[in-house]
Amino acid sequence: MEYATGQQLTRRQSPVWRALRAAAPQTIPVLAGYFVLGMGYGIYVQSLGLPVWMPMLMGTVVYGGSLEFVLASLLLGAFSPLSAFLMALMIQARHLFYGLAMLERYKGFGWRSFYMIFAMSDETFSITCSATPPEGVDKGWFMFFITLLDQLYWVGSAGLGAALGTVLPFSTEGVDFVMTAMFTVIFLNQWEKDKQHGSALIGLAVPLVCLMVFGSGQLSAAVHGRHSGAAAGFTPSDGKSSWGGRGMTAVQMGLTIVVCTAATMLTRFLPFLIFSSKEQQPPEVVRYLGRVLPAAIFGMLIVYCLKGVTPFSGSHGIPEAIALLATIALHKWKHQTLLSVAGGTLCYVLLVQLVF
Image 1 (cartoon, one colour):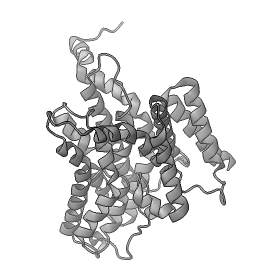
Image 2 (tube, rainbow, N blue to C red; image 1 turned 90 degrees about the horizontal axis):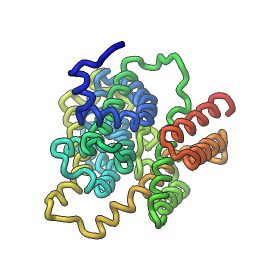
Image 3 (cartoon, helix red, strand yellow; image 1 turned 90 degrees about the vertical axis):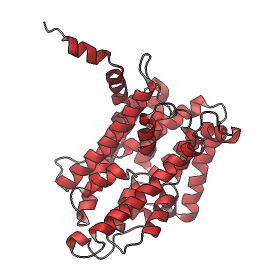
Image 4 (cartoon, helix red, strand yellow; image 1 turned 30 degrees about the vertical axis):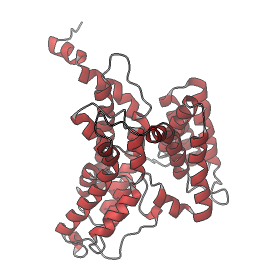
């Protein structure tokens, strides 16, 4: 029979260790989604002729999802820091609303608050705005580890994709539905929590109208989740990067990455800078937006994830509809996030790989 040492017992009783153990299961859906999307991002960047470490660098300092895809293609073109800054600002503008929604939740945790704001991605926001730490678990460390693990998943997957290229021993087709399933579950949680559903319905309706009127390319520019720059209407230039002989110099690449990072940080930190004083409370309208925006944002993200689905070609949206219904049914049945997300994703994977 083995006995735990005093050091092991101390570690298990540590509030930091308890928070890490509580946070890790919450991030499993993100790990699954980031593994596929991050691998794809790494492969994409390497295919442009950029160095193998570039995806990990951009994932560490920019951590902007689709902005990183766009940034990779920008590095192959002419040096234009102002254009890069404005483009990044437009793509990342949604983080202003994330900040408004998280004003109260992220306050009072010292340096941990700084990092949580710095690394506030779509997926991390979707978890931290609704997840509640178990009894006895420090809230600040709980949200910190959710944020840290999510970024480590993205950076690690991107680096792995860049290193391995297209050599994969199994098909991952359909696994990226995990993001759609996760956003759907969080949307349902917000729907059940709120007595009024106007903002949730608007979040679904507005992007649907934009999708029908302007097409998926314009919706990408407005919403932007973690998909390729090509999906957003950006394609690499005909030239190669300076690493292959043409394009920006190394210094110009570095400056372009810096300005895109600055634009991203501006959208994430601005709400917290404006309402930084403990005595300065946000106006009631800001508090109201913080309450109603999450449901609207998740509705918008669901539509964005499904923007490439059309009833007029391909599988006609049938596997997506079935998988969404399976996700909703599982959540209504058990109200367990992991089960709902995993079940809906597995359903979609089986449909696209074996049926359609």
